[in-house]
Length: 214
Image 1 (spheres, rainbow, N blue to C red):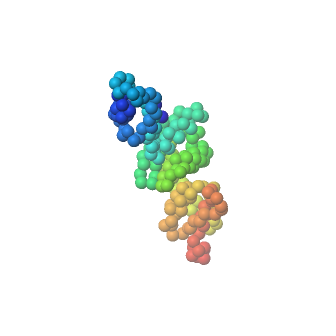
Image 2 (cartoon, rainbow, N blue to C red):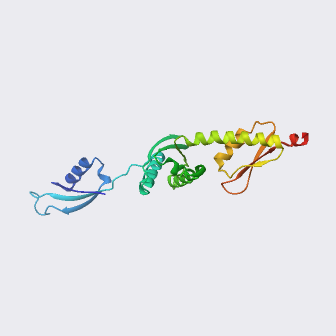
Image 3 (cartoon, rainbow, N blue to C red):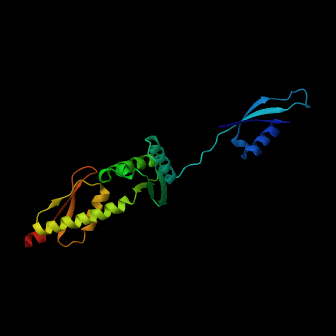
């Protein structure tokens, strides 16, 4: 809150000075008259007022809020991280850069995924329009996607050869989607997610007609 004092020949004169000085309309000011002219003498003396003005904080957009939260979080735990963000429609892509990339990613990206979940909750709290925040560091997501595609093709090849279904390690929705899409057009195998919760396993198995043919 801004608190300032002004003087004028009249209260109106003092309020006008305050309004011009602060660059706001007079109706945005809260006025407290500190001293008035005598009711019996119109000459001499000044009217003194105290002015209160609530400072309007600029509303950060979702991209800025996500970066502010991340910088604050990493600063608290003593890890140096720089951030950059691009906002597209209902998504915000935040790129992290740090010498502690391995620690931030965690085993099979679990730490990065957990961090991404927290950022989404913080950034979207109290907001009407949900913005999905996607975190990445050292191009991890592209590398992980390529590794998952190779895994899907490798396991599918094994299923075709042995005729036995194979179950992959627990994966988050993003990772499972890559497996499903990679084998979607394969004429010999199918995929399905099994389990409960966010982390499910993908089963890869022969299509029915291929089982019958075998």
